[in-house]
Amino acid sequence: MAKLSKHSAHGTSFYNTVIKTSVNELIRVLGKPQFAGNTGEDKTNFDFVCETDEGDIFTIYDWKQYRPIGEDEIIEFHIGGKASHVTQRARIELLILLAK
Image 1 (spheres, rainbow, N blue to C red):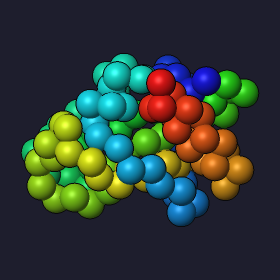
Image 2: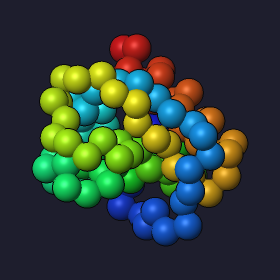
Image 3: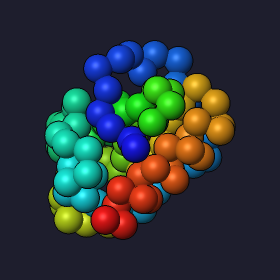
Image 4: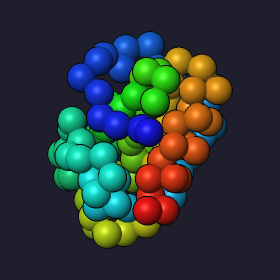
């Protein structure tokens, strides 16, 4: 199942895969994000670098909210990866974790 990773996210891109959830729900299933600067001053406030059960690296991040995000607020997060099938697999793994 999806988990936090210590590997580099270099080369990941957005392939139109998103998930609606809250920061606290992501923290519950994954752990603390590698970047959390919830000021609204950057393009992202929270960034998670993760890997699928097959070892493919992917990222989860809010995109251009440009405001502080309530940690229980449901928003759309982008899922980035090195290929579309990776981001789709990551989304499925996240949905399974979030349903528990």
